[in-house]
Amino acid sequence: MRLVAEVAQGSLAKAGEELCGDKVEVIKTPERATVVLSDGLGSGVKANILATLTTKIAAGLLERKVPLEEVINTIAQTLPVCRERQIAYSTLAVLQVKANGLARVVLLDSPPVFLWRRGQVVPFPTEHKVVAGRDVKEGKLELMAGDFLLLISDGVLHAGIGGILPLGLGEEGVKGHFKEILRQKNAPHQVAQRFLDLCSAYYTMSPGDDTTVVAVEIRLPRQLIMFTGPPRLRELDSLAVDKLMEYPGKKVVCGGTTANIVARELGRQLTVELEYDDPEIPPCAHIEGIDLVTEGMLTLNRALAYLSDGEIPNRADGASRVARLLSDSDKIKFVTGLRINPAHQNPDLPQGLNLRAGTVRQLVAVLKEQGKVVEVEWL
Image (cartoon, rainbow, N blue to C red; front, side, top):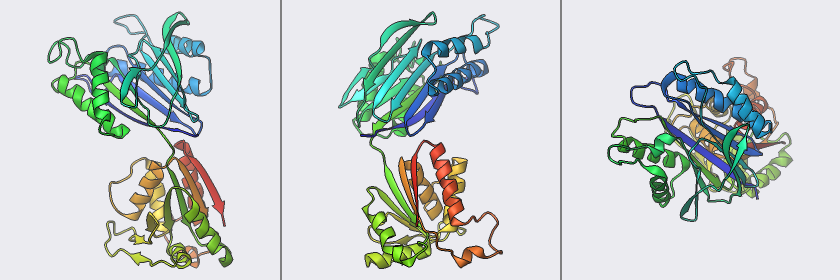
């Protein structure tokens, strides 16, 4: 059974500093998700540089399956030496989760990774070992759908120290809050934000240390199928609609002709919304049993732009909704018709309006870069 790691993160910079001295790097592919968290020595710009170098080097080398000893050696030899303390130092926490659920944790002077499973919170099991002359904790565990993991920098453990909490939040405090937050079935981004809000409150809104939280949910993949463009041969219309309806997951239809084909083949009514959320994007429509029905090329090209930029507006227009659905999905199938639409041959159309096949290919490329499993079937 294939599993997916959904990752969310958040940070607080130490009071008086513009840059956070913690850094997180996330690399997602269809085979695995790799999360690297580093806390640079000190705070501010210097710490940020150390942490950034550490995460970039570690994530890149681990993705290439470079041995751990070589990774740690490379980091130690690359980090610039602090003029004041005469050491080159940053912590390292690595979580790798394969699609089969096998997880690996590596900790170098970092707080433990916490695992929530069926209402209980425990540290991820690790063993001590010496690697490249450094004391390292490493462990492996088979995860299952519903598991949650929490990676933190030591700013979380120190929250409230010397003030509201004389000894700081500590590991037991983290475990208690993690358990309480997940009683309400929060998504990863909500878990990360709630932890940061708690830490900020314990620090009385003035963090005494850089503070970072990474929340990771292990779940089954979210699936989506998009049918866009009429098939090249009309006798393939029913086949395309069958593929759409038989697919397990969200169903999206993009294109006026495509929507009419779906409505006709299903014997269901097609109704168009009368309100425009964005005057540049045609309104959405409704077909019973379909999650989203939109116009075709204008909507798809705008959705492509949103996904490429990495910023999706929180609006209800078709392009924003398509982009959000694609972004939230892990396994995506495009059923793309190849019938020529005479309207797309109009030289007066905007230059950025690509033909359907080209737009779909670009969407596929962007989504694969985000680590999604994408399939295209041309009809």
